[in-house]
Length: 313
Image (tube, rainbow, N blue to C red):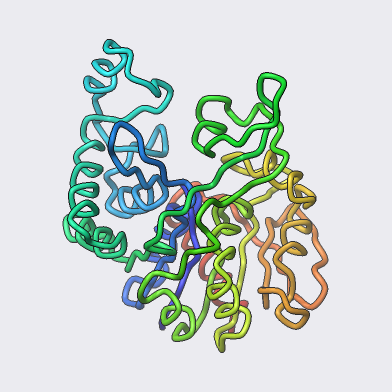
């Protein structure tokens, strides 16, 4: 079976471990959000790509949920001693090696998709990882700051301000000029099933779907599309989706997100929608099923995947 997954962040990374555990011999492709990417201290940082890569390689820090195991922070401390800003974004010593390899290849003219493939040669994630685009695309958040309406990078909003500044809107700079990375459209149109991971619907999945060619390929493609709710009991399990959804007028609920994605019969994306077994939702034109959705370990994540594939059938 050919499975294509739209994913971003730690939730997407954990879900992909479940896909791999449930279907270890299948052809799995992950299309990953790059809107969180940022350049700091001369390095190109791709948080979602790296989170997925490290998590699938079991090299991630299990307690933090992000970054490398057995990480140290001497370079970060030395940068702080120099007063080098920004000081709020922590780059671990081991993680910096990944960013150094990436920026060296990007500066040499390699596209991000080739760089990602080269990094994965070391980590062997067991999943084909594709950035959504090779073009630079960065999410900014419109907020009220110091009495003025400003656009700040998503990373600054989330890490420095901890999403405490109410988001008025989200702007993906560069998205209008971007095109899907090589292999992305083929992975969608050639899939037997497309899964939308329980990632942030606004800044992860929403950014991927902001590429019109990707949205059209999913909406018009032959494969059934099954989404999994990132909202349980009216709140995200992890992350800041509850701080993002109101900015686009979507209710923070499994039903709200399902209706936001919409039915393929009515020009949306979904054929099926999985919600947690304590929730309820009605999404017109979409078959909704309630199953356990907590990804407490790989087996629970794999069970979610099996439920999604059963619904697809």
